[in-house]
Image (cartoon, rainbow, N blue to C red; front, side, top):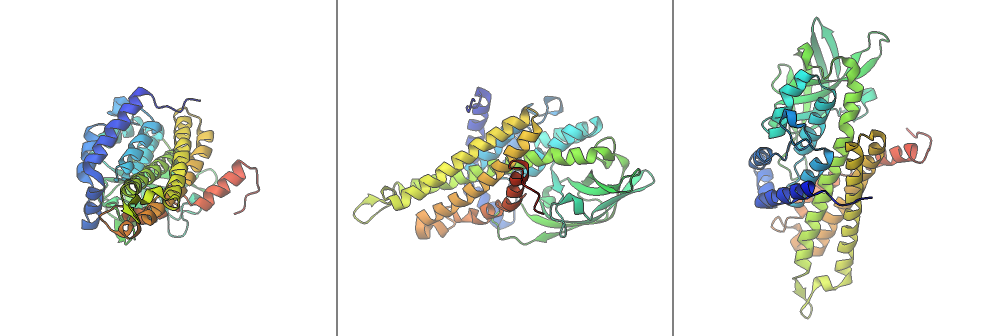
Amino acid sequence: MNVDLNPEQEQLRDAVRALGRRYGHDYFVAKAKSGGHTTELWSEAGRLGYLGVNIPTEYGGGGGGITELAIVCEELAAAGCPLLLLVVSPAIAATVINRHGTEAQRKRYLPGLADGSQKIVFAITEPEAGSNFHRLGTVARRDGDDWLVSGRKCYISGVDEADHVLVVARTEDSSTGKLKPALFVVPADAPGLTRSKLDMEIVSPENQFLLYLDDVRLPADALVGESVDAGLPALFAGLNPERITVAAMGAGTGRYAIERASSYTATRTVWGGRTIGSHQGVSHPLAHAAVQVELARLMIYKAATLYDAGRDLEAGVAGNMAKYAAGEAAALAVDTAVQALGGAGMTTEYGVATLLGAVRAGRIAPVSREMILNFVAQHVLGQEKSY
């Protein structure tokens, strides 16, 4: 088993790391606290080709896979700039459209996703259903050649920055009368689509929204794929990349926190002139967190490798495990870093407490640690379904 990146991937990692460090966590926090967005970083990353590394070259991308996109997510986070829209736009939307969209949809959307000039966010979660698509209340119904979509969505990231929203709705199966999922590309300014910002205790330039769809009229070609039968495969096509890139962002955040804390503890001297890092009560928790982050990274790149090899079932297991491991490791790393820095850890200046809300949310979204444990128990350990 080869655990090394290839030379091109190493070059990508080095280049993205350099870009991220030119902006850094101070830039990220300043944008978040001012109500701004990381537009400059996003635009430069797009111009340099980092946003489209997983998009085929014929549509303006780099021709790589989720492994390359995970590298981008991890390295920007490791520089203190964890960009959530990398998950929803290049990872989810681009993957869904590339794998299950029509050729016209690929030509229309993928070039803009690749160069960063277009953002498509993802809307599945609902107030009553969570991410359980079997209970989604958002429904699309035919009206002549058009579709009318109505429903509510919650915790939808970055709608205020997006050109389109990839909406998961349910349509009626004409043969059975049952509802089944379908995906629609909805313009963010479509009549009948309104939004309400959610106030979150997370320091992030990317905002969360409630969405309301009130008979939003869409043309026939807004449906992803050739027919509604593409809906379920298209939905699942986006879930593994989502898990893997969220995990990569978490691992990068953990690395950033450990690096900040380690730099501090290696130079901070008290009680007779020894550095506080020389005390095992300080160094051992940091070392433990570093081990957990590194273990998560191994699972992340295993999952990405399996996904890029087309081994979707195995990638599903590994992706869920990677997301679980990275969520736990990132939360541990940031909390440990805050503790190691003492009072300084709670200041904005030292740049670790600003990550507490985000890493705590990483144990909940986009799938909770409990649902991952349910998945592993059922699909890996062969246990009876508990819910």
